[in-house]
Image (cartoon, rainbow, N blue to C red; front, side, top):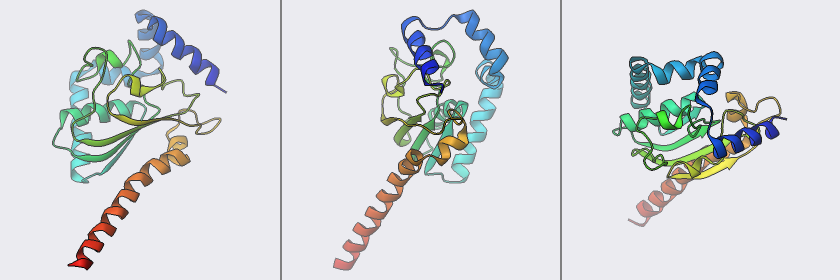
Amino acid sequence: MTQPARAAADWIARRFGLDQQVVRLLVTTFCREVHRYLADTARRDAVRATVGDTIAAGSARVVLAHSLGSVVAYETLWARPDLEVDLLITMGSPLALPDVVFGKLDPAPISGKGRHPPGVRRWINIADPGDLIAIPRGLAGYFDGIDPDLTTPVGVFNAHKATGYLSCTTTAAARATLLAADLISARLLAAGAHRC
């Protein structure tokens, strides 16, 4: 139902960018947590430290990051290159949102392009076609190293909800890629041990 609105917002963002005053008003009014995170350096550092410590303590191999969480995960994985993650799945991500997030990222994009976090082996992005937060479309056009960049419906009333993304088959399939790789590795090791 929101797909036409997302397409219009995507076109405007790509063609004209977003008016700074209007965006600032919308972000500070409706997306207070985004504004607080991006505007308050101490808060930003504290959030990234907490997320980084959590990933490290759990020896996380997969990081699922939704909405603002994708911004936090991206910056955390850059701030902590010691963290090695097999799979980063961003869902409903505003990482490329011009004049709101993209130009304020740390590290900043170089020549209009964000980079793949160094400790991440594979990065998959998933966006619902009607998700009004995940604009502009095609995150891979703004960041190196996203493979694949998927568009999938997560539900009529779940276009941006984490529950919609977490329960959709595309997210399950993305997580299964890591599981399948583990099974293949285990079989190869078993076959090699059997021959010895």
